[in-house]
Amino acid sequence: MNKILATTCLLCMILCSCHKDLDDEVFPTSVTFNFSHSWDDTPVTASDFNSLEFTNAHGELLSISKLRYLISRITFEKPNGEYFTFDDHFLVDLTQENTLSLTPNNTIPPGEYSHVYFTFGFNNEDNYMNYTDLNSASWNVPEMLGGGYHFMQLEGKFIDATNTETGYAYHYIRAVDNTQSPLVFEDTFFTVDIGAVNLSQTTNFNINMNIAEWFKNPNTWDLNQLNNMLMPNSDAQMMMYQNRQNVFSLESVNPF
Image (tube, rainbow, N blue to C red; front, side, top):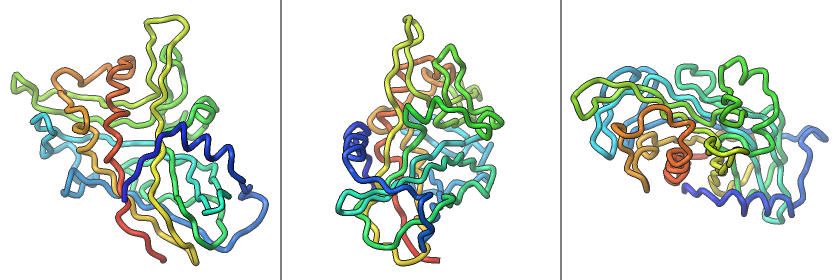
C-alpha cells in the first residue's frame, strides 16, 4: 500500500487541479492520522528508548533516544482532480503521546477520494515561513545552512567498530552545499500517497513508520562513517532522501 510519488509530478498535478478552500464551508467528515513505529516487524515506542536493542542493515547495534519528524500538507484528491488540502503542520514526537494522532483543524466532504497524500517535512514555500511552535521546539535549521526547519531528528547511540558506545544524530533537512556561495540546495521533502478511500464518516488512518528503513534501502548506512555533522553533508542528506521509499506504510483505515 505504500507509495511515494515524485514530488515534482505531484506538485504539477495539484497546480493543474481544482482546489477547494476548507475554510469556506463546514463539512461533515473529520479525519485522524495515527502514527505507529516499528523496527521492521518489532513495534517501537518511547518505552524502548535508550536501550541498545536494534541492529541496522550494516550490522551496528544501536539505541534510539529521540525521534521527531514533521508532517504537513495532508491532501485528499477526488477522481475528477478536485482536491482538499489541510494547511496544518504536525511535529510528531515519540516521547509525547498526544502528538502521535494528528487531526487537522478543518473537516472534509464525504465521498470517494482516489488519493490521500501527506508531505514529510515542508515544501520549499512552507519551509521558509515563520512558525512559533516550531521555533519553541528548537526545530530551526541554522542560517548558515539556509534556514528553514528540520524534517526529522533521529538520535541515539551505537556500538562502533572499536566496540565503543558512540552517539549518532541522524538529522534530516533540505540538502544544502554550503561550500559554495550562493548556497546550492537539493529538495528532500517528499510526498507519501497512502491510496484511495471512500469517506462516509469520521475516519482513522493508521500509518506505520519502519525506522529500520532509514538505514538500509537503497543505501546501507554505515554509522561508523556517518554518525554526526550530517546536516552540512549534502551527500548524506540525499542518501537519507533516497532511503525514504519504504519508510511509511498504511496499516489500516477504519471509522471511530
